[in-house]
Figure 1 (cartoon, rainbow, N blue to C red):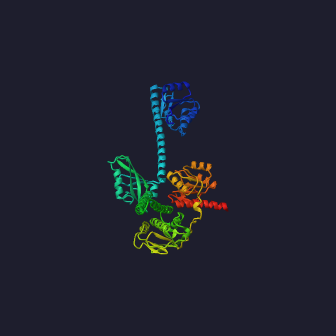
Figure 2 (cartoon, one colour):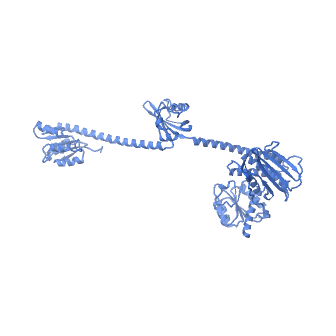
Figure 3 (cartoon, rainbow, N blue to C red):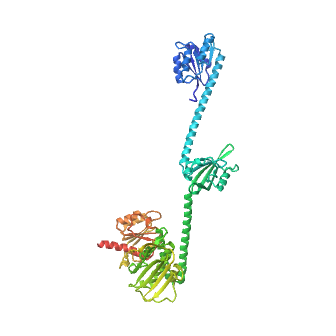
Length: 607
């Protein structure tokens, strides 16, 4: 061990001689072992390492010369220095034999203490130096082991990391190129090592100026970062985020680079920026449309009640069109879906609508304009035209021509039609949303029924060449308008104003007790105390899911619908049979959905 004491071995068959030598040589840091025979000496040398062996020549049995020869023949004891101690006369023949057996010196008895101590001191120092050298050797081995392990770990990290690790010298010559760099840039290390980075096409001139600035002696910052284009073998220059560390050694500076490919991040940032810009554009356009509708409605309405009715209806038409587009991720949506939505909202009567046309997709802008157009046509027909009398009907036909859409709205069976003295806001709105050109909209005021022809030159694409197979939603059932009277209804809604609005609408329709619950716990408590005929359930109560309430309603056979600003995909799963009324909603849509729920339950009970 590096901290072991220095050991001497005294071999003499006379105990008094051993004690005398021991007393003469004893000092701090020295351990002296004793042996009186060659066998004892060999046993001790198999256990301990000795800096010096003092051998008496005359030993019983195996003498000192024979013991020295045995020590030289064994690997473990071959390097132990031997000094013979003898009382024999100074015989050159004996001395030669001793040196031949491996001795380094002779001391004759009687022993001169000063000579003995001086010679022993030499070997004590040699032993201590050997011990120190061994300790240094062991330390160097440990350091080398730790270094090799750290290098292996670093190599494994750099080779397996998603980052590329590149080292450049002061002249921007590539000195290290990791496996990660090979994967990132599709360039082999063998083709790049030892070459200037700019000559390989990996680093352009502007990037070289940036990195050279990092390496300049005047720049004392230990770390740097930048975004630079770096050359890919197949894709050309790719955007990369680079972090550089300056390493100094002597008068040379080395640059260690850690590189991340940010192509996907750049693409995501561009998409996000595009989406944010598009969202802002659409929101502002929508707000501008709402502002225009409000201003024009105020100017042309006879009173506030008339304005409210027209403004809310138009706003609902825009809202429902937004919901349809949201379901299609604002790409495009079918015209038939818009017509079905108008029927569900009660704006159009499915029993008195005849429609025909191919399946077509409308772009978002066209969908929003068409929603307002059909809303105006339907409300005008309900006020003054074919839908104002029971026997009236509307024929809605469309065709794709020259990449655009030609839509015909024809009314029949209504009151006799006379051309208006002046156009109202609804007519102007129809003309505006279809483009405002002279040929984009035309009204033929026939006595038997007005015919509107609308032409949209863009924003339309056919789905299939065959005629659309239209499945109309359930029409209103006679007698449903009064089916809500006296009913106990649970409204689960966390927005106070929305809850108040729903409660007022239900009470106006003649409902009995309308109980409002704003949390899941309140809703469950209400269901435990009161028997409800019907329930309206918000899709989310301030982040709290409503699955428990929906499951309780189903178990207790209480008909319910969801009232939410979310689409169907964000509602509790497993309740697809429950209708969805999307916020904001028109009162007619609310009444019809609830009436159909109650009517369906009554029909099942009668079976």
